[in-house]
Image 1 (cartoon, one colour):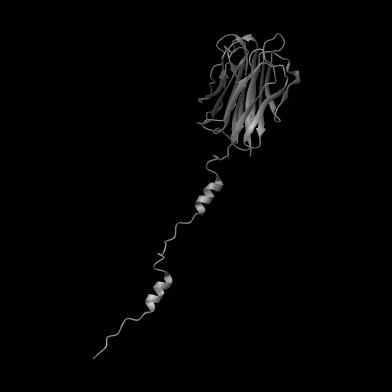
Image 2 (cartoon, one colour; image 1 turned 90 degrees about the vertical axis):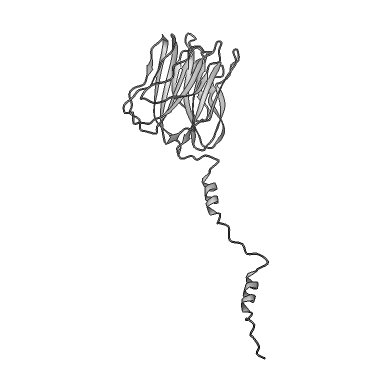
Amino acid sequence: MAPSLIASYFLQQNTTGTATLTTASFTPANGEVIIVKLGTWDTGNAMSAPTGGGQTYASRLIVAPGGFKEWCGIYTATISGSPGAMTISSSPPVSGRYSMVVERWSSATLDTTPATNSGGTVVGVSSAAASTLTTTAANSVISWVCTDVNSTDPVTRAFLGSGTEDGLRDGHSGANGVEYFGYQPVASAGATSFGLSAPTTMSWSIAGIEIKDATSVDATITPAAVAATAAVPAPAVSVSATVSPAAVAATAAVPAPRSVRP
């Protein structure tokens, strides 16, 4: 059973500003996996670590290539402590254009160090925003964010791997950057391409993370391995080859010698 998306919240500042991005109020259950994906139009304008609900948000990927590029990042949390109604917020350090998606996943888990991938084009090189992440379990989901400093019109956008869009800040008019947010299912563990196949004239940065099925098991400790270990019987007590059961029986059949009277 793959992770299930309960809800996602897209927020943006698509005119220059400093407003804090804050989700609508929601009431999560303990164990929900929270993915916070952020993007800005400027590599030097890093969004703050998310806050909300008394939860701890771990930084998983920050892509800040420098120069004339956009910035993106991913944070995660697993809900604990029954926080009740809560919101999640993030703010920019300076005025800019930026966006955020918060996803809530059930039937999901994160490794202590989740499988991740990030990358991007060099300045002056254009292509579709796509990279490869090696997932570690079957029935996972890759959740990702990418940014395009070329501000290519996203009207032709197409997603790899039956991907689903859950946010788009479209600043292509006026060359104010474009940020894409999406996720895609991955049936089998292994190297998987994620992101977009179009448009092909992007100068991009991308970050992706694996969300695992909650029932997945560490590949080094599989149910088959456990069962095989349990099936090994305790070692039997060995019998010396020099004292065989037949020899013992033959010895027992020899009567004790009788005494002879004179």
